[in-house]
Length: 216
Image 1 (cartoon, rainbow, N blue to C red):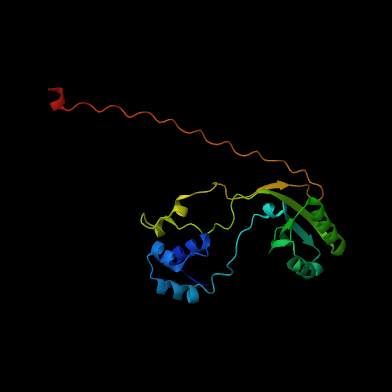
Image 2: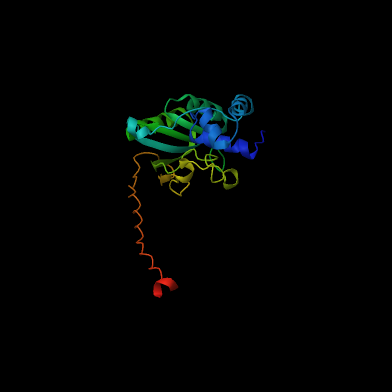
């Protein structure tokens, strides 16, 4: 376990927002010398940062079918199913969970047809006891934990533009539940975008009262 101080958490927050940020820019935002930042990132954060990666808009690459699948399998086949899912090219994320299920899988496909083939193959190859699917309609928030400095970590001089910009207040994805036992041909309702808030009308400020000299 690694315990980080406030300044170190501030560095993590900036790197979470932009992992390609130059050390000179990071030093300007955090008021930490470049030499200190270089040493911290090379040594102190080596066991904290797992991977430098990017977030992809899969729909723009023609992978518009994204589904979260929860699976429960017979106990003796857990390891085999875990290995199959871990090495499958369309599995984006894999989690071991509890409360009635063994795995939660985030999969990405180009079409619903290919996703159904994936489910059919799993059910034919492994003794699946229960399957539940949730089709992701829209990403509202991704990888944002520890990506915003806490108020106590940043003052007015340290606030950059990305600190002031705020996304949707919701912290969950839109998930469309499917039938408890089936993952085939789900009916996915379309969500209309939220109405834009009306701009508030500002009133003209009241005219200033004349000074005593002007009244004379």
